[in-house]
Length: 259
Ligand SMILES: [Zn+2]
Image 1 (tube, rainbow, N blue to C red):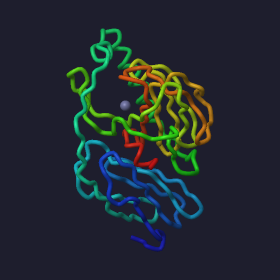
Image 2: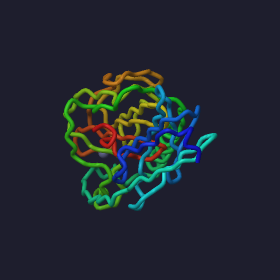
Image 3: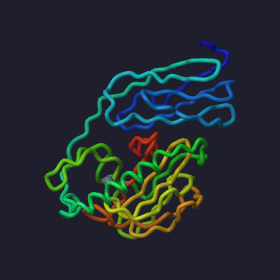
């Protein structure tokens, strides 16, 4: 370890729940650094003299202490982060039968659409597209279904909730949580009308069930710009906004970055 090159390595917060985002800040004389956390590579951007990167605790992570290893040309340094035990209760929902029992044609459509979305969220943009903090997409934030709950729909287990459901009325404005580029603005069977914004460094925000979309793929957005209106398209029980956050392809708890 050559301390001369790394002046400080800081994780914030140092204790996290499953699904939470953490920020890694490094003051270094290096030109280029990266870090490894479990199986993920954390990418950094240099702001003045500080490298900033973001990581997330994947959903299946066991509680415990984990190393964040910093790698660069001249040094190897590391620090610990604590993953806390996190309880995720079960949630029972009743939706239209066509949203849980699919015809072969619909099942194929859903599979193709999922693969398409996974590909969009896996793209690596090696630079950062935002400058300030992430802000809420609605003027008031009231969570009606939290991140991580186990979902039972019409009596069938459907995995875990990969974002947060926010209370809203049909027609409420939805604002971009941060600067970025629209990489997806389409209608898919389960999410309905959906917008995905690339913020760089493999960070994406994901807005679904929209009534209408005001942006197009390729648009460059500023934080707070209206991207569409709240609706009830796709698999829903009532109008609301489902907000997702993906970092390194993992669904993260968006409120851990926004609040
Ligand atoms: Zn949701």
